[in-house]
Image (cartoon, rainbow, N blue to C red; front, side):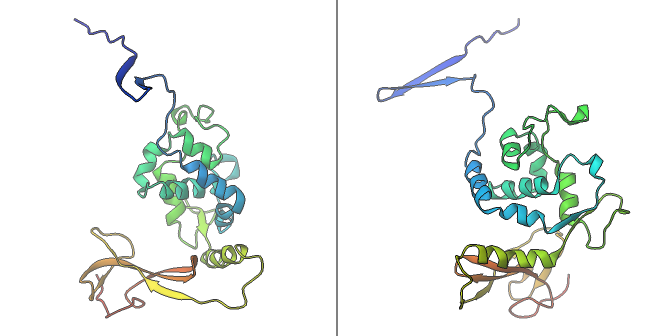
Length: 232
């Protein structure tokens, strides 16, 4: 016998004079509404657009559905909202709110060129992986990874954002240099064994001026702070 569930409203104990009702007609709902505030910051500062300018895109422009600016925005917004792993984007690529933050004109993805991509307005993990792991020497002849990041532009970006936050360039600054220990539990690229912490880790070095980040470098075996480590 087939069970028929026709109830559309569930009533709970009231909160004072307010009714508490559960319904299923809310449409598309997201728990990441705070992301719209991040987009407001980007509209005012243009930091993500400046970040995207640190890349050169060697892909065929006629075949691109996700621009570098959109890929960068998707990755950064997701990180800010707590989605650190690229695997998260296999689900996030369906999210119309994240698509709206990124600036997609079709946040539902119904107008995608290929039928199998419809309903997925954003890039998946494989496309974002190419954004992050394209080698410096890649070009148009490369098979998959063709979006090259220029580290010199990225280094300059931190300083430029710092200067943009001031009405005039400061005549004197105080720099704070420190590292952050991040233990690793897998075979991540760039890991190394640190003798002082007695485990494999990342040890990024940060340079701050007040609340502004001026530089970030991932320390390796030969550049790590503290007692020397040993190679993996």
